[in-house]
Image (cartoon, rainbow, N blue to C red; front, side, top):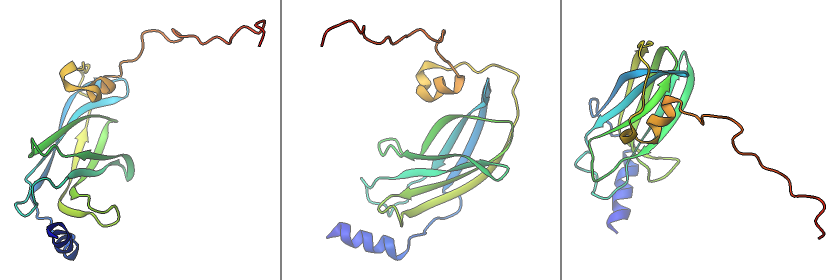
Length: 164
């Protein structure tokens, strides 16, 4: 019953975002073969009217010169609310990042708790980015680490002279 009442209240006012609740930050970390590696951060406050245990996501897009480079959607860790980070690689130039803090109750009509947009200039830093293993798989992918030799695994067909 409480959940049904909460859903009705949320659907009655689907856009309750207030300016300043969600802040986007970007810190260049170094250069990789595919661009500039940056730490993207979102700082936010969870509104007091959101019941505990309700899932939240940060979703949005990253665009450059009117073209969307990436779309993203990250689940908010409710045990550590207040901020999130991601490591991404961007080509040099100005990028625009749009983000929304959303309660994903329904795919067609999610409840937007906060939204923000920011533009950042991306320029080569002149230093090579080296991933720290504590930063996770995103950092390793951003570094551009690949297998040291190609063709190290070869799949051979079975011999044809074996009787069925």
